[in-house]
Image (cartoon, rainbow, N blue to C red; front, side):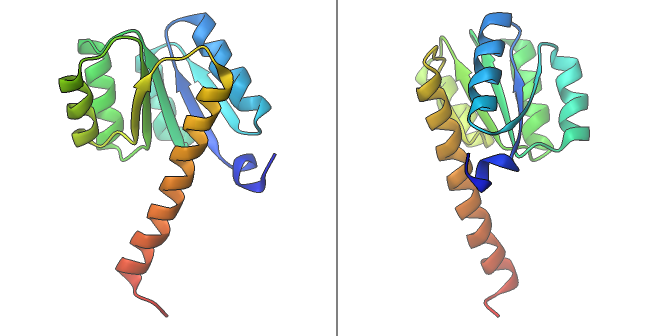
Length: 139
């Protein structure tokens, strides 16, 4: 476990127990602090109180409930990865434009899943440093 992982809080949201358990176990073994939920309503509340470094939504498709959850999470400035089974390019593009950090195929391979999470956290960390320098200036 790297120091970077050990202090990262991740919220996993999935209504299917198998995938939620797979994601939670994979990330926990990688050293992340993971909370998992199946309820979209509970996820909104928990995301606000936990202030996770990353929120992961896993679903089979983007329907009305998922769209509402995504909108709420992004409006609250959460870093969001979406793992989805079926998704058109048009919807994927809309999710990126809305502010999702990554949108990718839902996977049952733990190593691929952990790689995507690590890449997003690494990119976000670099982006935050750049934005901080841009806003505060170089001292």
